[in-house]
Length: 291
Ligand SMILES: *Cc1c(COP(=O)(O)O)cnc(C)c1O
Image (cartoon, rainbow, N blue to C red; front, side):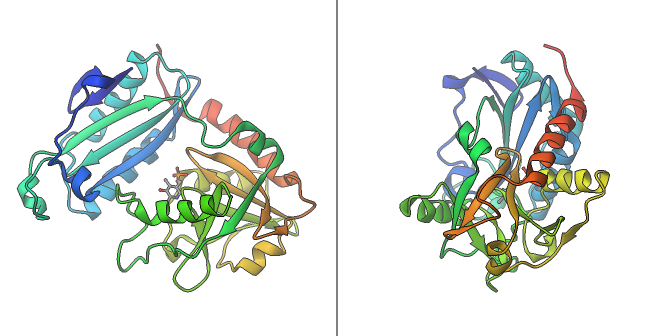
């Protein structure tokens, strides 16, 4: 496997970065998770735009243009002969000293692109649905570390994941500091009630998510009313369907929330329709490349 590292394609075992890299020392950097389906990089422009926005927000200059970033991604997919795969783009502040000051790292930004195959959850979860649990760790508050920044500092989500796993669950539901539903550890949440779709609004401190937007577009196309609305756990408990979305997870049905059975305990009808439409979208919407 080859990895793109600061302009070169190097063998995975040769892809080394400094222990003084502030991405390693402090989680100082930003990233993207992208997918390719059948030689199409899904929503590449949206992912690259978000990467540069995250960097802008933390005052970090990505030393290559968006166009060259897109080329680097495609080049890495091609050299690894991947038609279908997951792409991780990481831009860290780079090598500095042991102090926090990012000015010491100026001009050293590290760019890494890794492509590989992953599926986040076992296949049967997609057929049978997932059981999730609310965890005590609340999602970062926007005034402290805005979740709109897709940052390398992922401990907030990792703590939530640990709490879910310690309780015997695969996935954690995170609330915001006010107690409203925020998202899962790397996925957004949707519910269905009386044939309409609801998901928490973006302004409540969740990332502008690309799979979430794709699901909202699909609902519009299918003429299903979709609302961005503040949700409490109660709304989840009385929902008829529930599902999670994210680039790595894709779309996962949820059948139980905190021990309450959602709908009839099986993946919902609309959920399955949206999963099918999403699959169709991934076959047509993307930047094409040839191996
Ligand atoms: C990346 C990410 C998601 C999913 O966003 P997509 O754009 O759909 O991949 C959801 N939540 C968090 C915390 C994330 O980092």
